[in-house]
Amino acid sequence: MPKVTYIDPQGQSRVVEAETGSTVMENAIKNGVPGIEAECGGACACATCHVYVDEAWLEKTGGPSPMEEDMLDFGFDVRPNSRLSCQIKMTPELDGLVVRTPERQA
Amino acid sequence: MSEPIKTDVVIIGAGPCGLFAVFELGLLDMKAHLIDILDRPGGQCAELYPEKPIYDIPALPYVTGDGLTKALMEQIKPFGPTFHFQDMVVTIEKIGDPLFRVRTEQGKVFETKVVVVAAGGGSFQPKRPPIAGIEAYEAKSVHYAVRQMEAFRGKRILIAGGGDSALDWTLNLAPVASHLTLLHRREEFRASPDSVKKMMALVGDGKIDFVLGQVTGLEGKDGQIEHVIVKRNDGSVFNFACDAILPFFGLTMKLGPVANWGLKLKDDELVEVDTAAFESNVPGIFAIGDINTYPGKLKLILCGFHEGALMAQKAHRYVYPDKKLTFQYTTSSTSLQKKLGVS
Image 1 (cartoon, one colour):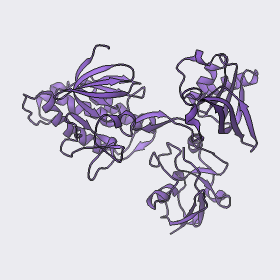
Image 2 (cartoon, each protein chain N blue to C red):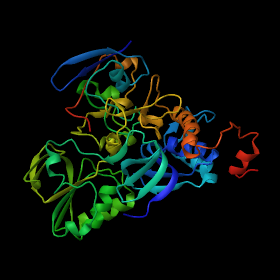
Image 3 (cartoon, one colour):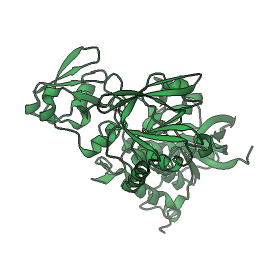
Image 4 (cartoon, each protein chain N blue to C red):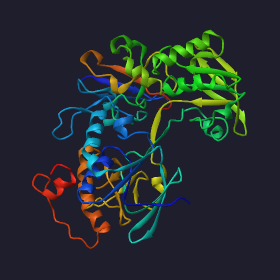
């Protein structure tokens, strides 16, 4: 199974095995990774699963959709590599993906 | 005190579970008033995902939040519920056995035999941007809504956000403020294109400023903002003098006053109920839908519908203590069909 690494603002990493097709948000919640709240449950209707995609992976994950961009307006400290983790689906190509959780969710 | 509105049931929350409760109560001859903080029915279905599909409503393979709300409104029409929108229940006082006096923020007073808390995740409140120390300014100079435009006359205002609220207030307050800056993190807006065009025209005429960036800090004293620290998208940081900030970052759900009604709560956020009638520890006050908890609880709309049906059976005993309730089906009962207006 592809792996995702979550790095918190203090620099601590957590590696999680993710099923293909599941979202980066779901894997964080399932495995108790802190820093991702997912208030709306993955409907792209809030901005509380905000993550920063590691620069090396940006090309593979791609950027946010227009709807996701709208929701990112509600995020805190949104950067060019910001994504909502409920909108990143795991694929074999994303094996090894690294994301950073922000200091605060909105 | 205004004249109390007398009713059988007050339902707090007009989301899908509150709406369907009207149906189940109505079949048993109980009249309901619904109170909701939003300006329309539907709750989360209306506010969070009006256009998003729901796949787990029995017998509806696919329906949007908006579609479900409309269908429920149609279904409960025969029972003539009364809606009180943009209002919030603040206190519930027990004055009989059971009889409750319910007061709202807008000063409405109800006297009701039964209260049904169908408040979902609580009431929708403006989202507080996660800026350190913002709470200290909220009473005086950070505002999440505009109650009186005059309060902003001659002031230097910063409006943050890119949705309709941000743009509408930018247009409305531009002539009132001494200086107005709209701050948004990107060049695209969620707001209607027409408002964006009007806003851009004001920028073109030099009447207002538009800055691409995000607020990172606040400075001031005694609740009065003096400076806002803004990080522009190019990374530069600047310090910006202003008297008031209006952040418009959408809504979030807060439990709110539900916590003060003497109901037994679990983890300070969910109302504990029994599974025979979904009644709280206070006889006559029920809780259905996402706001309640019991062993095995699932936060599904379909579970909330079931909870409403069982709640109505017990509520009937409080509203009509002398009447015996016979269980009937809408398929065959002429009396139920009469109530539905189909017989």
